[in-house]
Image (cartoon, rainbow over all chains, first blue to last red; front, top):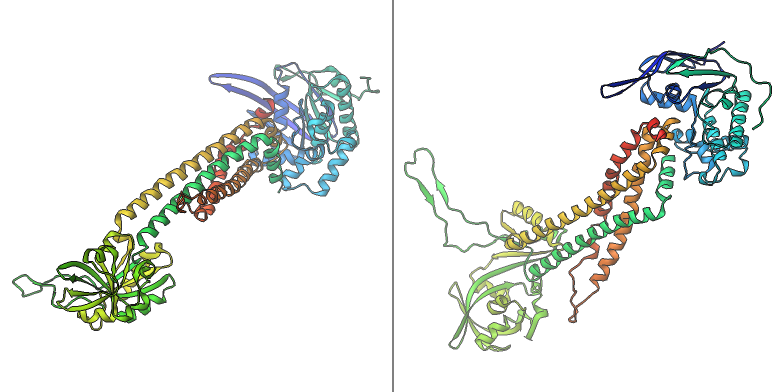
Length: 239
Length: 401
């Protein structure tokens, strides 16, 4: 199997004065293209930290990280920024939409800002993505006028805007009710299936993990559950 | 430019806050414009008052300086004394007048013969300062003909013009004869052609005018003149013109400022005070903008964090805040200039019962370009620190907050 993400020997230690807190210890993780992986663990197990390292938002204390064939753990800040923009997508627990912009503008933002303007092609793609996440009738709504579930769907569309190879989601349904959460999970599964986008979903919710094709469990900064691939569930669970 | 779109949305997302911020900048600029217009207006008024009846540049023969004679073989120190046998005069005055008239800053040029004399009628006598002028150029330096209270200003007739106080002291009126004795010992019986009143006691008591041709034999100057008086379009151009003419002619050129050093010092001090007030206005504008943008940066931390997370560069984030500063500076500057100009026009229109302005304000001299440039540059500088702080935000910290 080709490897999209290859993390080896990842250590992460935080320093606070003389105090040292080791959050990740010798973590190895490989993700193949098109995988939908749940990263499980209790609070404080290090899963958000690992996700941040995979998303180039944190530099590991030790270890190597390769994404799409490129060693990325020691890239400069400018190169990391560019890499995040071109190759990675993010969905956070809270949508973090820009309140002064419409749904379409929010989705197009990751492409428009580096390009210096919002082109017709960008606007068209943003609207296609919004239609795909079921928001055709909300495209020109200001972000502030959308419901929580709608906002999170806009956030997923935004993560897809630059056609990233790897989408990192940190508790993407954590702030949603069950019905909205199921809609968001269905959407991510659909994108995973149809576009072949690789997802790494950080969650402590077994219900979310059960919808993924693979699960990785962290405990006290170490991977404790084998990374063997599980077959996808035969039938989608009702919400 | 997408950063401009983002900056504009951010700026106008809170209309009340933006209105207050721009109003603060506009107020600062209004004060800047008002102070500048007032100081300039005062300087113009004082300059006009001081130079209304005098020359802006005066050309006189070079000062005679005693020379020390020395050299090898000279055992005794010797000094060549200044000769006072001949009266100092400008012999080549016509070429100097022509040169002065060629200068674009020059309004009028007036060659004169000035000297001291006594006027006497019967037992009464009074010292006078006599000015011999070309009859056509009588009003070149002081508009005497507009100040007549009796007689006329026709100097061609060979008469003399005297001030009303002098006329009163000697009991003279237009048409009466008066004996003039110059400091060269020449006497002539003249007719009082006209009596003027400038309102300046020293002039009205001690000055008399006659034609240049009449003054020549009286002061024993058949060819030359004693001085050349020059009026300029703009009195502030006196120093450079004086320097030029002194270099070109070898004559001693004195700008009006050097004859009124205390006024010059006062105007300089006034301008410095104005500059301080302008500086404080600018500093208050910068502090206001910087504090507003720091608050904006703090309020939008999570948005900045998410932008940085999905790969928007620090430069883009920085430019959003700098553009906000630029827009605040431009809008506030324009509004302040407009309000300041309107206020100055309003105040300039207020007059006392006698018709003179209540405030010596010059609305056109409000320093509008300087106000716009300084405010805009100041606003951009004020936004640099908040912009850098926004660009350096750790996306993870900002998102998790």
